[in-house]
Length: 342
Image (cartoon, rainbow, N blue to C red; front, side, top):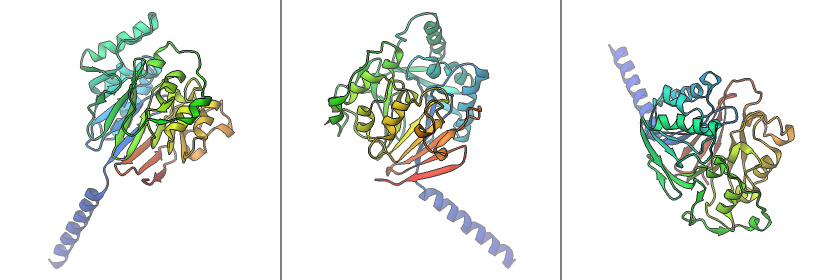
């Protein structure tokens, strides 16, 4: 009798300690950078378990990308996509929307409006997307709007070729790198119309500009930086040098950068160097080893989710606390690195 009572007491105390530890653990905003082989699919899960998917990867490949997104959502404890934000209408970003919508319920679709590209392929791509948002809710957002996501502030910086007219709160400082920044030929494609967002969770800040191209990026930070600084930067346009000038990357002053490149897409040497040379950068993480970069223009192996193009589909997860502290996890090698609040 005494033994049984003692064991019950010990189990009760252990349960109480476990519950106390769970309550004391800081709530995190989680980002899953899913490997869609050079496209984009980022799953975001708030502390209250609301979900947002930014882009849905490619169509086809036997539903490869949709299956990877759904599998990642399951790991995250998510059964539906509350918001699906499409940055722009290119196959590597919006092409997978019908396939993920067939696997998971989507509450609200978010986009920049009509597809500004024309032709058979562009029209078919948008029509497939349109069939999905007509079954649910749709929000078309402009710069200055916010996404109604719980626990986190999500500001729209760019949409349909338009940009913030005024600096974000606390931003607006002159950018000395603008003096040497040169514009490129204007980009008439959907890339330049990307819906770009800025996330704030307590003291933690993250930016995703989709595939926004060079000149539009310069307009955001020249002559003054309208954005401010960030803790985490998703390299624009998969790390292609049609985007990502030093003028914007260095102005953002990220602590950590994530590159959503493929083995043979993105990770170009000039774009990689622009990030790697950014003052204050602590680490550079990549979804793939970039074949074009060679050993000198790729990060170290521990920070690469997919070092070879073998279809494994490893992801990178970031867990951010409201204090500004965050950690980054590589699903391939289980490597986890923590970054303290500053």
